[in-house]
Amino acid sequence: MKATVLAASIHTVLSLQTPSQGLVSSTRRPRNTRSLRQPTRLLAVTEDLPKILSTPVSTRTEFASCAPEPVGLYIHIPYCQRRCRYCNFAIVPIGSAAAARAQSDEGERPINAQLSGFLEMDHMYTQTILKELQWTLSKMPQDQKVSLTSIYFGGGTPSLAPVATIRTILHAILAEDTPFTLKGGAEITMEMDPCTFSKDQLQELKELGVNRISLGVQALDDGILESLGRIHRVQDIYKSLSMMQEVYGDELSYSLDLISGLPGLSLAAWTETLQKVVTLEPKPCHLSLYDLQVESGTVFAKWYGNGDEESGWDRVRGNLPTPAVALPSDAESAFMYQYAAGYLRSRGYEHYEVSSYALRDETQTGPSPWRSRHNQIYWATNSQWYALGLGATSFVANELVARPRTLVDYADWVNRVRTLPDAGVSEIVDTELLLNVVLKRLRTSEGLDLGFVHQRFSPKGDAFVDAIQRGAALALELGLAQLNDNVLRLVDPKGFLYSNTIIASIYAELEETANS
Image 1: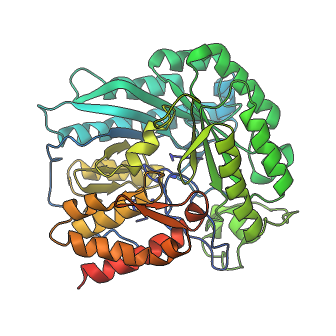
Image 2 (image 1 turned 180 degrees about the vertical axis):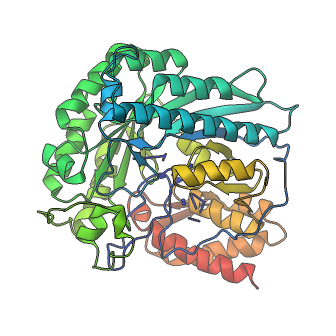
């Protein structure tokens, strides 16, 4: 359950899991939970940050003819065997049918009622995505090619989808009569969970062009995996890595997801987890480390919230055991974040975004080539991304489109949007765009270029720059941020750790300036 992964303000700021989906859904933290928690996938906007999107309906019927860089496409595949206890992403639990599909060849799998129902649902969902694709194409300039830096299959667990589904979607996107093309070096990423794919499936996906895997490991302890409600166990992780290496060989590029701040995860266990990860064979080119968010409507909210989670509790069914262990304290969670940043840096990983690490060669001086193209599209100032599928969010030519999170609502939306082109569309104005830029750029190691703010948001550029500096003044004084060569950066790791608070302070100053 990842990008995702990126949220209410861009995965709706835009609910990106965003964490992401296209960005990630909004992180609505139960009251009295831990204030230092960082977002779960791509981008999360916490309750202490103001929502920055307005809700006017756009009057545009065609995407503007513009050529920002980079450009990506996100496709949401919502299938999961079951919902994990911490998860509030837009998913569709499908039970053991997925396991039957993954563990059998296309022509040999047993067809039972459950599997038959899943295949019928998958066919309907695929057709709905293709309808939405046709709507997207109808809004694009027909005389201009759009070169994609990234195609990203997020979920959910896309590896539970039949390969034929992925093939159909990819072929439709990259058909000769569409504007979409792949840029040289483009990534086609698929999120996968251990024990949800076979060697034959990997080989077919490789032949389709899938050249990067995002593996949802989350933990390296069977007891913790069980408490999370995960299907796989540690042995499944090693088996999956072995299959990936066998199929992709030296061409293997994969990212690995881990969650800190988990119940039962001690400081010693976390350091041991990181030590194991950096010695894995094959070694992960990229790591995504997310601190646990206790999300409304989840089993964890019932266990670890403050008792105000009764409303909407019908999302979680069945009798639940009482949690055996408590969550780590704020201080312990903060230590986990800071330790990971220092340790991974010492082992050759570049901390290029709050939750993202990319492996770099000792001889390299510039950015790591293993940075996620998908992530970088979200954090860039001049990027745009298309999206398909339920729960996904797209941002093209200043138009934000946030899709419904259930199968029925999504299918209904696709049918409506083809006749009412502006349904569910919001147009972002300059002030909202500025807040969006601040939020995204301060999550990165490159930081926020104040010269860009001055130039892009003229005639109020000078006033906005002054507001940003006022909002960051305390962080600068405390050494949590730095201002060099007119670029504002949060210090790694302490500045990143307090990024929500720092950004909220800047937002307050910007909103006051915008309204003056």
